[in-house]
Image 1 (spheres, rainbow, N blue to C red):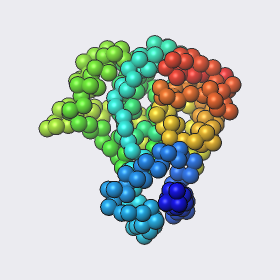
Image 2 (cartoon, one colour):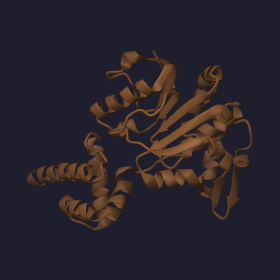
Image 3 (tube, one colour):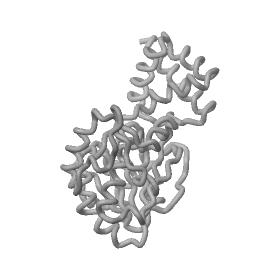
Length: 273
């Protein structure tokens, strides 16, 4: 019991130290999630206590960058949850086409799989040329990978299946070039993409947008931080703009429930009231 309590104190001190030293704010992330990730980091660093990890990251910025990879574990795939993308194609895109220009914010873009999925969808619907996509994340390593648009070939079969189920209109292989064991995606897909460091915990809104996609990010936040994120999204979205969330995320229990109307509730697609 005492050991567990001590570990909880150490964890709080580590998270506070990270905020004070590096301005990365994990204080309102889900406690259980952070605890699991730090425990995994301890094994990889071969350290016995969280206090030892805190000492390491405070005095070695490169060690902090290593730890950041554990705290922000990037997990994604192209056209993840294909029915979600199909719903965007069928229910959202026709309304986006009524705007003279479109701005899309992909919050927590990780290594870019969703960015390229959205760009492909918008290209097929004739919208990409008049769309600006803001792709943001707090992990600079993930952002760099996203900018490169290079993914493992071993994932392409699964991504192709997702693409077909999402209503894809061409051959998925037309969007990338195979080289060795990697797929290099067409650079024109990211010509209208701005990749940027942005934290939903500490940063503010940077542009008015018509569509915000923040999927499988809020599940790692506590309610206070979720509501902060929903506030940013509400402020950023234009009148009747669209908010799309992950399959395990909902507005139902947030302070912003009445600020959005469900458009396709099963697929977590909402519209600003």
